[in-house]
Every structure is written in structure tokens, then in C-alpha cells.
Image (tube, rainbow, N blue to C red; front, top):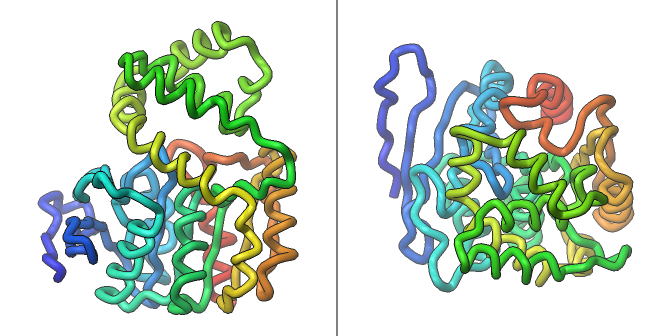
Length: 286
């Protein structure tokens, strides 16, 4: 069931909608543009607002729908029985309402897109920017998740965030002493940016437990029939590029693209979504 709510800001062309997913959870999404439908799925410490610039860049050619994944914005909580399967059901529900046959996923959102495409062959083209897939090809130390959860339980959110940044391996801080990494993050991430991250740390924990659970299951993606573009940023760690190569060797109809000067967060508003949008648009129009 969809309930379209017009934006109250006359300068904002997004419309807000809600629907009810399979387990009864309310899922919200924002829409903009005209043309073939494309669903954008954001990463772990993000919500729909973080992909708004990317959406605007695509809106002259596509009808863009940005989901608020569970635990964010207009959507309900993750729920006590949370798993990535719930996220896949949410994407299927949006696809059924909008008729979109294209999807873009960033980071954990890319993993959601892959799992959805594996379960239902309803998308014709998929673009993924550094999907949150752990291939198991390089030994992963998951002890950081234990440290993260302990810090959350004692409400030491700065320590939890530091454990995540170092453990996820997307930052040069990975190789630095914990105290120094924590100090740098405290100086760099402050104000409203920190408030938002802090609020999403519990959801981020459960999502990365799913990444851990799905480690080394990437060979399941050889059953995906959709055409898939696997994008990475030149400045991202080598482990990201290795993961992309393994996925390209596994997924039958796939191609890879490395974007110069970009990094893991480039699709998000405060980084370089315009450059990402240019290549995403070319791919979906080809």
C-alpha cells in the first residue's frame, strides 16, 4: 500500500511515499524525475537524504526512488528478527509499487541489491558502487564487531565508531593506533554529522553482522541474470578492487569500472556524486 505525500517545500521536487513491507514494517522512499524507474539503496551509516544529489543528477532521465532503509527517516525499525532478507523484501515491495527495473546500490546497499537480485530476477540492470561483500578471499578479523558491540552496550559511541572505521578497512586509520584514530575521528566528525552517525550505530552493528554471516557466499551470485556494473573508486583500498574482480568473475553478465580520484563515499552528497551519476547514467542508457 502506498501513500504519496507531496513535499511542503516548493523548491524541492521530491515526493515522499510510504508502503507496508511483507512483515508489516512501514518503508518510506523519496521520488524525483521522469523516465524509466530506478531505485537507489544507500549504505550503512546513511539514509535517503545522502543520495539526494545523485538522484537529482539522474532525474532528468529517470524516475528515481531513494529508499530509507529500515531504522531511518520515514521507515520503521529494523525489528527484533532483522536480517538482510527483510531488506530484500522492502526492495521488492518498492519495485512492485513503482515498477522500477533498474537499481543502484552503494556499500551495504549494494549487498542488499545483490541479495535481492539473487532471490528474484525482477531487475534488468543493476549498478553497484563498492558493494559491502566480504568474499573471504583475504582473512578477515571480525573481532572488531565484538569490540563495537561492547562499546555500544556501555554507550561509548566514539569507541564503537572507531572500532567500525578501523575494522571496515575503508580508511587509512585502519593502520593507526586506536587512541590516535579515535582522536582524529573526533576532530573530523562533529556537529550534526556526528549526531546522525551516532543515531545509526546500532543499526550499523546488525547490518555488519549480516555482512559477516554472508562472508564467502558470493558464489551464489552466479545465478543472477541481470546485467551488472561493478564500480569502484581509484582511491579505495586494494581489498575493494580484489572483491570487485571476484564478483566480476562470478556474475555472468557483469562489467567493471574504476573511477579516477574517487573513493568509497563518493556517491554521497558531500563527496562526488556528480561524477558517479555521469557514468551510472551512461550505463543505464546504453
